[in-house]
Image 1 (tube, rainbow, N blue to C red):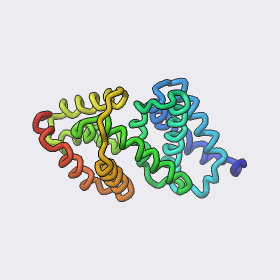
Image 2 (image 1 turned 30 degrees about the horizontal axis):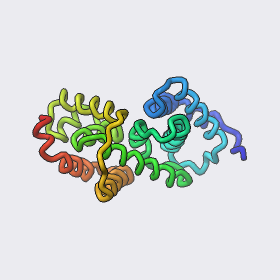
Image 3 (image 1 turned 90 degrees about the horizontal axis):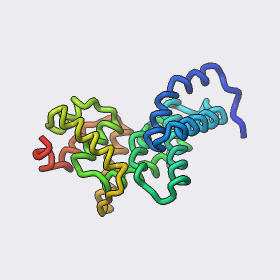
Length: 210
């Protein structure tokens, strides 16, 4: 079913966030050509959407792009999970159309599991602050009590490990706690609890990293 005729404002809304959508897709699929295809699919979905019901267009488009990109990964690479962690930054976007809430939450749960499987606590802290909440490296360093150079190294290492085949056993309670704190931070915008959780979770590892 086609949506309403698209207005110039709706066209402009999409093109304004298009570079961000490409970045989201590229981080997940790892291919510029495939990322372009995903963004094109997001454009088609945007045209067919009841845009009057969308409260936050950038968040809706980011969520739709994330879901489309994950679908590409799942169909092309069957059981491989190495890229799913990249869905975390986009899955926690808030304000999207309620119709995609369940999909977004499922993507977040899956991505959080990958972060627990593949990253050490201190790597996870740096990765979440940078990729999910767009903290500058200087602020990550302040939160974790590290130098800015160490913060950059942690983020880089975390990105590499997310794409690796390494895997740790994940306890259900740890997974539930991480998802809960990410959802709370995204929904309320209160990042103090998130920072405290990540610092406490990292524990002695921060002393070594520092």
